[in-house]
Image (tube, rainbow, N blue to C red; front, side):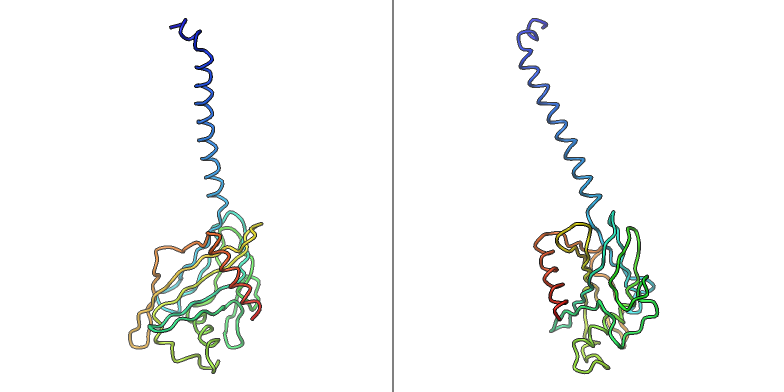
Length: 211
């Protein structure tokens, strides 16, 4: 056995070095995956207070660093129609005693890790979008009770990322005698992470600024 080892020591050394290299590659992959997971941005969109439209729209930053909320975009759907409207800035009719932690008339702002921001009630947010799509901003539209579901999309800036990050969550509405019960369509918030989708929300943000 000893003679065989002596005769093949170079081959054995190559095999051992190769095995060690594979082990280190495995450790490196684990480290990279852990680092990416820890630094990956994550935004949560939840309802708070009730299962009706008077529930609060709560946005949480579960990222490792602060984010800056750039825009909130609402998509509304009826049985035969769909339209999208930014609701970032409060309009002249919308009432909100304490819009943000900064006490500004906007839903924009910095959100530190682990913090939650109250964006107002879902009713106020939807009414804002309805007024923006109506010829009569005082009344909104006749589509109010025909709404079947809506999507809340958060667009934010994160660290040194070139493209904005985003997250969205759909909610369904069930009407009963003029009162709507709402529930989330998915168990959690959908994170927008692909470069293609992030490029799309960047274009939506540009369009919002131009309008």
